[in-house]
Every structure is written in structure tokens, then in C-alpha cells.
Amino acid sequence: MTSIPLSRRAFLAALGGGLLFLASPAAAAEMTVWKSPSCGCCGAWVDHIRAAGFKVVVRDVEDVTPIKRANGVTPELASCHTAVIDGYVVEGHVPADSLKRLLATRPAVKGIAVPGMPMGSPGMEGPGKDAYEVVVFDAKGRATLWEKR
Image 1: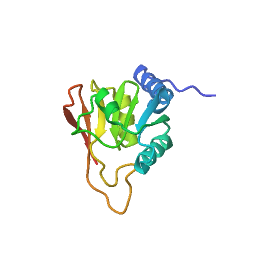
Image 2: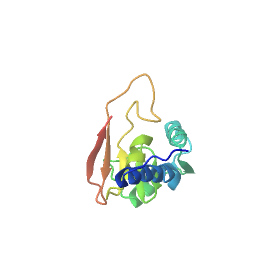
Image 3: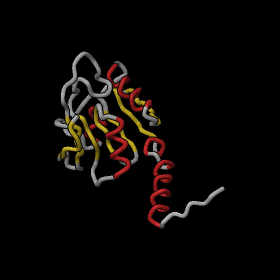
Image 4: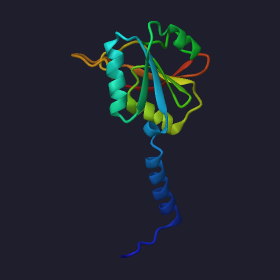
């Protein structure tokens, strides 16, 4: 077997890549989702998140509003379901790749949201697709654009 000499920088980059793989955000923590038992789009979003490798516990509740309030979700940020993972609040139809980026970069925010229920967002697939925004928000509910979809 031939050994290929690596610079310190190349070695650390390779090691870091391996550590990032081992510490996949999806595998790092379990997500709890509160949703209405009769909401089909919430169930479809949970399927999307699970397909992306997240471990999910679903809590069906008749009224998600108290969960939203307890987690700092303002009416302007609200959607149909609320989740918590690894210290972050996840509101609405947030794409799995957006959530993975949040968990990988760990910004100092309260959570991430897709306000409302835009057509074409995960769980809201259908014949049309609306442009929508993914936002991050602080403890006071102030939102900042995370990405446009």
C-alpha cells in the first residue's frame, strides 16, 4: 500500500469532513412535532423530514396554539405545526435541507419558520408552486430572511 503525504491543512480538512459526516444533524437529535391529528399536510411534512434522515416523535394535539406561544412563535410566523429539535423551534413547512443547514451552522436564533402554508413547500406539494421565504427568528419573534425558495 502506498502512502500519500498530506499537508496539515489537507489532513485537517479530510478529518473535518469525516467528523461532519459522523455528526450528521439529522442523526444528532430527535425532533418532536406537535400537529393536529387530522392535518394531512403536517403528516406529509413529517414524512419529508423522516425521509431526510431525521428521527421524529409526533404529538397529535387538538390545539397547537399553546405550543406555539410557549416556543415564541408569533402569529406572523405561524403555520399548522410546530416542532423542536436540538434547542431550535421549527415552525411550518421548513425544507429538510434548510433545517440541516441551520443545525450545521448553529446560528444564535430561536428557530426557523416557513410562515403560512405556501403551495410547493414540503408537505404542501400540488399542482402549483408559490415562491416562499424561509426565515429564522429570535426570542422576540423578529424574523430575518434565511433563504428564498
